Image: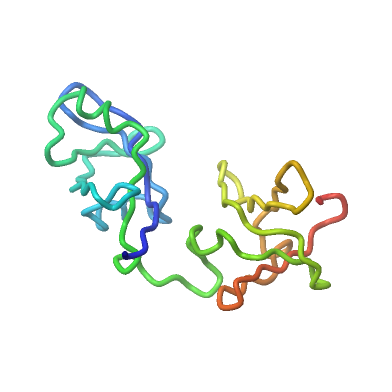
Length: 167
């Protein structure tokens, strides 16, 4: 199966004629339309997405076959995925979130801290959520060049240099 990358989400209906509110996770938000057809997480449902306009926190959009508010509401919270091969190659210091999941996290001395569980963005910098063996909670590591100087995808390893008290 081809690798899928989450590029957005349907936030719900927008109006009464089947329009949708769509949130884009793309670096250039409007690029989400160029990756159509988009897929659901399982890769079994396909969506031909057309952006209509920009609205607060995203776009208004149409999907072929969605004609009513009720149909649009049924798609609420559906994540939208693009095929990896349809996405652009990234510069050396940028990563798709999915590439970071599962990577080993070590400190600058080589001591293993844990593994990346998820990557989050709440409006400021990205955060790496790291599972730490023996800890009941995960650690949140700011994904900045100062704290995360090395990401080695080939070795499946991230080196962090956390400030005192972060872990």
